[in-house]
Image (cartoon, rainbow, N blue to C red; front, side, top):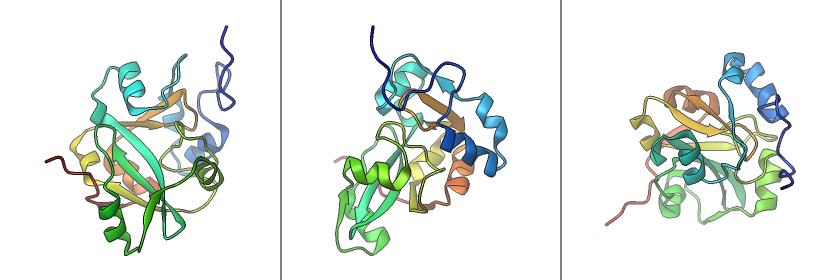
Length: 172
């Protein structure tokens, strides 16, 4: 028998409480009924896509980076990688690096693998890659490594307070 991860919620309480509260504050209560909980973790975009039976690009990754030491959230489709140089340019920063796990939890209130696109502990600048808009619906983490929710990408960008940018790593 496996022990659930510390952020896992018991059956019946699908979203992380902070995320559920954010949904209420944003007037998105109806989304609480659309949250899907899986018995196995959906920490990675590949795990989430496999569990949902959707395309990898239909997953919205919520990634925290440090731009000149200040946390910034980047929303990216699950099939793509973030180009740090493009993020640096978009922010006018000198240096952008991936944030450490403790910074992610301190900034968002969630563990890596369960970070939702909004409902964070602190107000953070948000960038959303335009690739998300290629889909009618995307799936994002609902605050735990076991839960996801669907949302139209345009609505997700608005509720996350994101700026649309092109920060997807280009393949040659």
